Length: 109
Length: 120
Image (cartoon, rainbow over all chains, first blue to last red; front, side):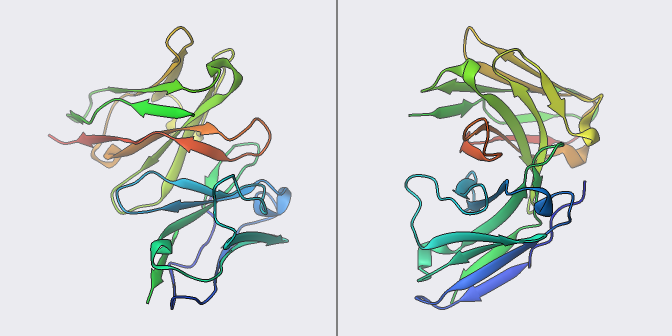
């Protein structure tokens, strides 16, 4: 199973909105809505930010939102803040579970 | 609250084996599976496999078949990852992670990670 494709980096100024894409195939991202997103700060464990493509776990800021269309899922961060600077990974759950994306480094300018 | 606490860092020689533990608390261990995910230095996340907390059934990523064994001790709510025939490219941070729930296909809780270094 190949890794899902994400842009290597995305940047934005404080207060702006950015969107990270996650492109797979009809066998993974396009197969169901079991797409999740993880935030990882340097030296820390990943943190779940979005599950089932659209839903935020309790405690995650509503500045984070997820969407999906066909074989591409997206994570949007609104009102970008300095603390959002981190690596972000998408993930698809299929019959051979948990295929991760290549990762995106978000930089707050 | 759900907590996953992993064992400490390990340094191993090529060809050796390593066993990492992940002790769970704050929930009923048998009700959820535990996944193992690794991350090589400067690289992305890689799913290694899953073990059921209920009956010990496993599902390993094809890449690790034959070299990995995942076990679970329900009496201590602890999951274990054993990786054999270590190579230098097995040097990575190893995380255990619990499913958020049985249906969402997401990893809601993570251990702090265990650094495994393979070096001669």
